[in-house]
Image 1 (cartoon, helix red, strand yellow):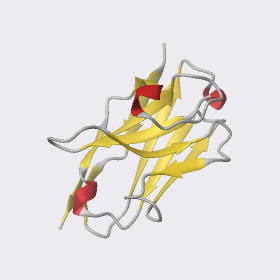
Image 2 (cartoon, one colour):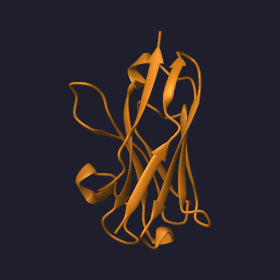
Image 3 (cartoon, helix red, strand yellow):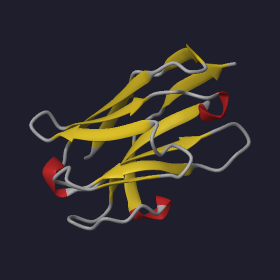
Image 4 (cartoon, helix red, strand yellow):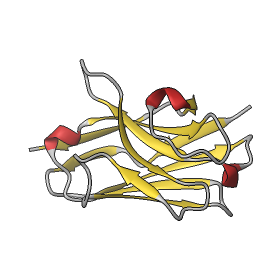
Length: 125
């Protein structure tokens, strides 16, 4: 079965940077869109960023455009989220996810079928 393991979360001051990593196994990695989502306390899980199976296409939530960069290494079955200029409102648990369908690029939460355990990101003011 598909397994996703996130790492790289932590505590950082506003304006700082973190890089999240997600290692995937149990799937043909280079055939699926990968996404990052986040969930803050008391809020619903929301889309952050996604990357196409080849890495040639990306999409971002408006709230993170220009600050976050998603990338992938298909040789290592890994997807990264570089987060710069972090703000307190970026505080959340961040989840890596795999799209349910090969070679389809959508970013709706319900289109993603496998999820990691999440990694906490806390940005202090």
